Image (cartoon, rainbow, N blue to C red; front, side, top):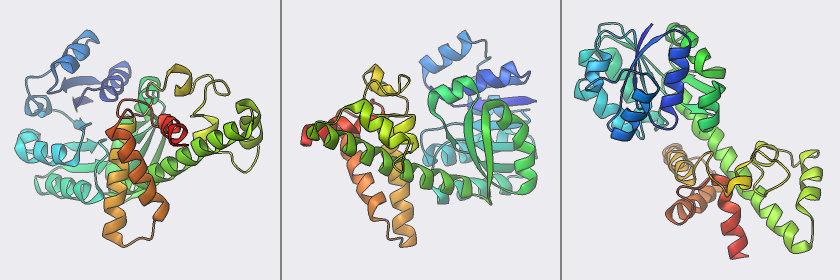
Length: 293
């Protein structure tokens, strides 16, 4: 297929590289000069604009920082430049209502659209092991699936338009709450004189087991591949977790859901991202817990 890949940052570029490796013709674009240079270094042709990349493409894949960027790009010429019936895949993490607006805009312009946010971080993008949560019709999901399978290991059709985003924010709310409490438990263990490895050995084989512990352990040692062993270099940055929890809070308020833990997690990560945590892995929240203890 001929694919326009717009948004060639830390996640987008390795995803695009994997598509090229699978034999697809990829034309990229990004507004950041460094991203353009990195794409060119990987042998990906870079168009002069998003609209130029989309012209004649079978699929337009976007990986943007916010829903406003997606909608502005769609309205600003991206949809008009694409041939009728083009499949638009948006892998940005945006609000559910923004994803549904983007879907309606694409359909009104004669195109197809799915929202397909990802989980798995930069390592998952590089290794082609991302998880995709997809919202859209059965037919559009089936059309997107072969490409998503190149970039990801687990692809779940979550339902209609916007429900991929809904699944993403619910999952990340669970992750945020669990990462906070794992950090709290390790700090509590420290103050009680409990060795990190001992606590890990107990909790990882008992009812405290979770991804935030077994994969993203917030203390150096027990999980050598966790960000704690490289001074909390992301990974998944605190600023991104704060952004996703902001989307979750928007959904909590919009639906009237009594989600006290999710709301508190949003407050904690907003403060973390406003300080030293913006560019650190979100598991680095343990340092704020330790400092405040």
